[in-house]
Length: 301
Image 1 (cartoon, rainbow, N blue to C red):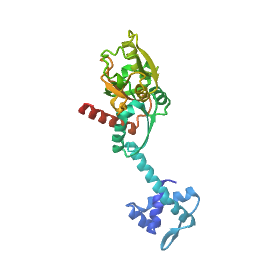
Image 2: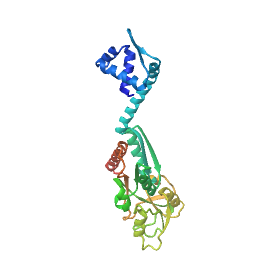
Image 3: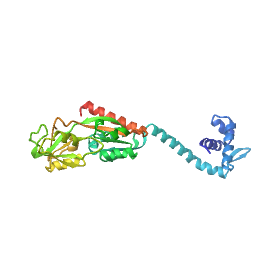
Image 4: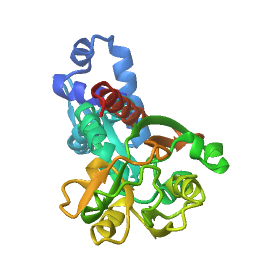
């Protein structure tokens, strides 16, 4: 039984005769008669009573008619949904995002994406970059956004991922308010730096800081999981930390200073598994990311 047979059967019942149904369908009568006969043979039951006045459904025919509308409607909805999925308008997208990137970028990307694809369902997983890489590799995430550039990727990441470098996000140095007047232009003399812990998959901020301050006798490191945690420790007077304007927000206990020259912008990058299907929704997310990045560059933010 196929949908063409069902549609012909419904047309015959509605018209009251095969000949009239054929006219309504802009067809000749034989193909319609053949389709009905084939449907009855496949189901093993008579669906139509044929009389001199036309045709009307048998009990089995009435049963099929009661189900046919739903079957055709389900078919139409399925076809429409698949069409929309092909256009990237509906479906599920799973994106892993690092906490710093959420504050700086992802909210704007999500708003742009949903404006273009309001029927899509986006699942954002707020995890550290190493977990994002693991979940992309295992197929648990479709895409991920991390605060590292391609030059910082470990070899195994570059081996299985494709990526789009989004933009550089300026870094500030968060210091306790009572130390805001101190002058340490080369970064030496601040003492304790509160930094994200090292990740095997990426060469990041801890490496840059430790290399630059290797000869600073006052230098020590307190490792934390996220910049948000670091900010709380800075507010408590436990050290200084690289953060961004948006993460710092308005904190009366913290002052943001320009960082040392050697501490450049954080590179945000979107990445996905190279050998996985690149779906229309993923293409839509990439396009939304490009739009936001271009807007940020245009306004210099």
